Image 1 (spheres, helix red, strand yellow):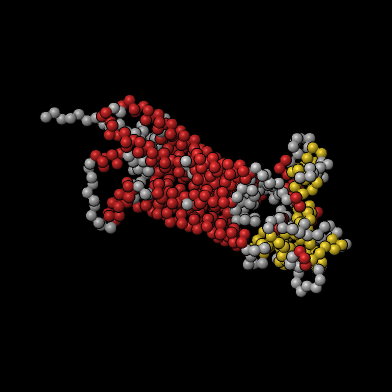
Image 2 (spheres, one colour):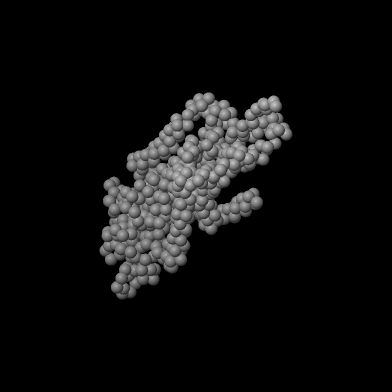
Length: 535
């Protein structure tokens, strides 16, 4: 069943991606048919001192090679061709609102607009540093409308986007969603607005659904955390699980704030949210990574630090420094790169610029998805190693399991199943789907959004999955019931001493009070042979 679903998903992706989109809109291109090939790069072309790599140009239907000028140089969009300006069509008591209310007319003046970093005028950047593209059409299903003069609420940014700030709404407009021109002696910007609110409402609904899913997931994460706080048993893996839940809950909470409020936060708060998302999610992956590595070491013959003989307290301190400390160091690194890296570098994180998170493909790849992918790969490798060690132990103990040990056969299989089930979900495979989903969205924009709703929903509902894996178990429920009875002074249940109870105790898993990292050679203990007394 799973294979058929995967094949169907792959087929749909292949169909959607077969229609390769162009790297940019035709109106944002220049003709580079006469460009020379680059000497150092066989797939690149040199035109007007700019190098167009393979991802920066395409061949049009009529065979013309078009270069995406905005991919290789800063640019902004002018509504009318060079040497022309905008004028009213007829007598209007308002600025032109759509195409039939204005026209382009010859002009001797030159368009002049200041360049800004948010609302502050940039030093050293002028219009001469930009390439000018021409066009007034919206590059999506929208139409133009006039907002305000550029001198009052609109600010042309260093990267070519347009920033709107009226102290109530702050919003960035990409180059395909605006154009600038002279209008009656002032510089006006005309931004795209939806013909109807259906598409906008749909995008808002998607954000609300994702945020609501995370809110539904939050109580289950909190309940899982509280259960393991209340339970009297303490070991390394329960503490690590609680830290994992805290980091995951922190990441989901900040992401909900981002989904609900977007860029309505002040700049400082916006950046804090962005850095917090990176920190909490990276910490959650690091805690999973610590669990997986510790589990693998428990089944290995490693005798150094973090071996089976190392105390759990020392291990927990080390893993805490690793998970929290490494995540904090990485966030500090991202902050320093955002602060001191060249503003025009495509590798600058740009946290809080245009979005309260990392802004751009390379930024998301290098500072979010790549570290997560590395940790996921390490976790999967640890899972494969542990699987192999358990299989080897099972194979070795088969020789000792004759008729006298048949009582353990079913329990071994049951324990094996539960352990593997936890491992699969603990490796963050749902985030593996998230990484794949993100990459496909970038590489194949034609893929329908509906294709990724299921993966997004599974990712956001991960808290419910964790609850059912680690709490919704007979042993945990019985232990919790005993603990609550003791706390509230209720009578304790009489413990069962039957073979069934003994077998249940034997089938404890990786979060049991008898940790598999103890001095025992493996979790699969052999029965002790005790001589019978002679009558």
